[in-house]
Image (cartoon, rainbow, N blue to C red; front, side, top):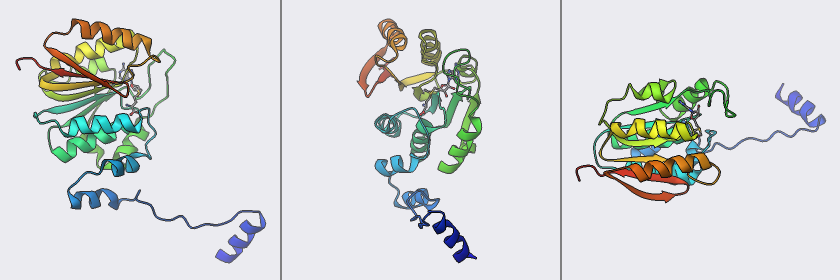
Length: 231
Ligand SMILES: C[S@@+](CC[C@H](N)C(=O)[O-])C[C@H]1O[C@@H](n2cnc3c(N)ncnc32)[C@H](O)[C@@H]1O
């Protein structure tokens, strides 16, 4: 039977090639676990099956910041899309066993604006299943303003914001997040570059108003802000 199929495919101009098994298999994470190390390059390679809106450079910076943070607390992501950034943050939280991961997204894009991507919650859930266990992620499905109310004040050590990029959206998310952040905690905000002038304007205004926060640095369009209250 195989020979007949091969013959027909050959006749039609197709060639059958065996695809080599790659490192994208189920055992990959358990191999890393056995070694008890995280190879960021391999992590990037493994997570590359997820269709995302952040670059590998950004994802690696986010991973490192979250992974090497020493204060205890939970971690929040606003804006997961299909889970690329989530996959790095999830790994950092899991490895360090430092807190729980919360993600907020409406899984629809920005309603009424140009970025309406359709419903992608199922794709997000499937991707999270592939990288571990989506039951370990606290998914807050809905608008960030409403969902942020479910997070306790002074409970988060790390916040990554990549949600609504509008002027008002950034103000709403950043000001909504500030009371949630622990002393010594870090906020990483994405897409600070010419492509999003409203976002840049909004961030500049907020940074100008912040007290007890040190605005640390820019790296690959990321703004990194640390809470230095009482330090
Ligand atoms: C730029 S994408 C996030 C990309 C993602 N970090 C990645 O790694 O690919 C922005 C996400 O924010 C979500 N979003 C936008 N506005 C929102 C809002 N007001 N509340 C909740 N989610 C929102 C969108 O649904 C979208 O998934």
